[in-house]
Image 1: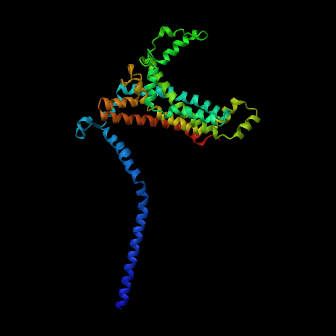
Image 2: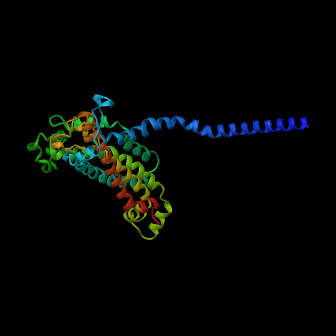
Image 3: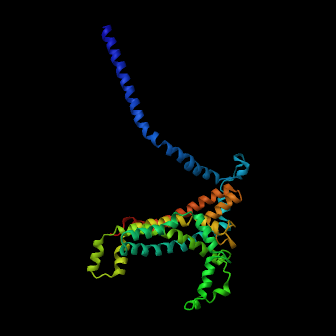
Length: 337
């Protein structure tokens, strides 16, 4: 009887050990994926989640960072109320929308036909070389590009004014530029009427190539059989573009427009460099929402107000994107049926 009891106890002990080993192996198996993604989780929590949550908390505080964390003072919704009644914020939002429209529409109006011609009229290395060349401005430093255009727009020694003067002396087309000598020096960055168009030209020049790449990829997905069928039906080149190619790239248009809306409503580097950091230039004509956010937070050291403005800007971008999704998402995501 003692042996039987002893054997039963040993078997129970062995079974318990096996269960413990199985639980340990199961735990390790479940833990391994988390160990592999832990570097990303740590980076996400430190550099994304914490700043995001802290900015929400900060938007309800009055805080000058010079005083340290102990200088925070809870003010509730006062920062939001002050921002909403701030005329500079509304002016910056107006400038932002103006630039978003003035730069967004030309980007796509220029990029779509160029991409179509590249795909349909050119083959091989030339198309790839031209596409890569057009993409270079997008991957070039925005600060470097803005500094170059700052010198181009210079009133006295800028290349743009020199070119206009040269065109005014050309025999055939000089009459169209007869007004140029009397208008010199044209202050592209020193006039409230010319500052926004000058900024818009830089943005268009930088991002059009990116959209050409997107639309080129879209047109490459259109089957040649569709063009052949359209030719059989008597469609000319314009009709093939408008009724065959363009409807087929709706998902690419939707994607490119989404990026343009989000990106153009966050313009900062171009207006900051072209206005030489002077609070948006003449009459704050170049003051965008992101630029104003920078001024409030880092120039005037009102971090609580800056955090509130950042969330107002987020809501504004989310609203604009939602409107775009509401009107264009169905056809854009499904494509042409």
